[in-house]
Each structure stands twice: as structure tokens, then as C-alpha cells.
Image (cartoon, rainbow, N blue to C red; front, top):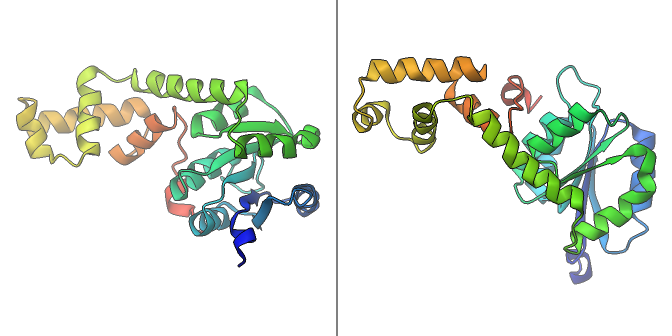
Length: 223
């Protein structure tokens, strides 16, 4: 790899429509400063790609043709594999709820596939340190959704989640909160029921992603 190539910004694409991918790759190759490091069709391969190359930007299709994978679940998985990667969701439906979930999951911005002529300018703007009002609103909205999700819990329940996330043993937590271990266990059960999850790790994920959680994702990412 030459020194010139190492200076290129890395772009990755997750989309399961080959003709669309070819068109997008052709569009991106018009810009000499960009390097398309990979085009994949599944979430599992996207996670591998993100972990290997840490792309500057990952373009993610919202509507993946899989029984449970979506652009939202892929956004969560990619950000876990490469936290600094900016994700732009590409959508053909522009349903408000889908956009809301994508933003809550950590997408940096979104773009309608009907406006693909705006994709290259958007990518270059973000890579050069620019921003858009939507990007700022998206970040603020993500924080708001996180706060709203956490608000279904009592203050003590939020403290319990915070302590467990810091690996505080339940026995020590019981002493710190002047409660019995059985009481702590009961409160944990209440947390799981309120958030509709099966364990504390899932509870923390759901709060982190503003109420968005895919129970199948953890077990099926590599499939």
C-alpha cells in the first residue's frame, strides 16, 4: 500500500441489492480521496468488515432481506465493532419510525435512496469535518430517547443498573444500598420486566440505544 493510498478515507457498504451497490461504488469512485474497502450483504460480514478496517463511513441499507436483520440492528452491531465509524442509513421508504430507530441506534445521518445524487456531497462533508442540522438533531434526539427509556425505572433501579454495569458484585451492592440480596434480586426482576428484556446486559443495551433492542442479535451476529 502506497503512502497516497493510506491517506484515503475508507468507505464500506452494507446492502443486499447488487445493482444498487454497483451504482453506489461507481459514484464513490469518482472521488480520488475515497477508498471502498468492502461491499457486503449481511450484518455478520458487515461486523467483520468494520472490525478489520474501521471504516470512516459505513453506508447501511435500512431494509435488509433477512428474517431479523435490519439497518437498525446492523447499526448497533457495527458501532460495537468500530465505535468511531460514522453510519449513514440509506432508506427507500423514509418511514418516520424507521428513521427514529436508526437515529436512536446511533446512525449519524440518513438519506433517501431516491436522492442518491446527494450521497457523495454528504459523505465528503462529514469526512471534512462538516455537519448538517440533521446530524446535530440526531445526536440530541438519541440522548433524549436514552433518558426517556431510563425514566421508566425508579432512581434506585437506575443505580442498580449503573452499579452492575461497573461489575459491582450483588453482595456488595446489597451492602451499599442497605438491602438484602433477595431484595436486590427482586428489583432486578422488576427492571427486566419494565424494559421487556431477559437480563441486565440487555437492559443496559436497550437504555444505551434509546429503547431499541434486538434480542436475536447477540446470538446471531456471526451467522
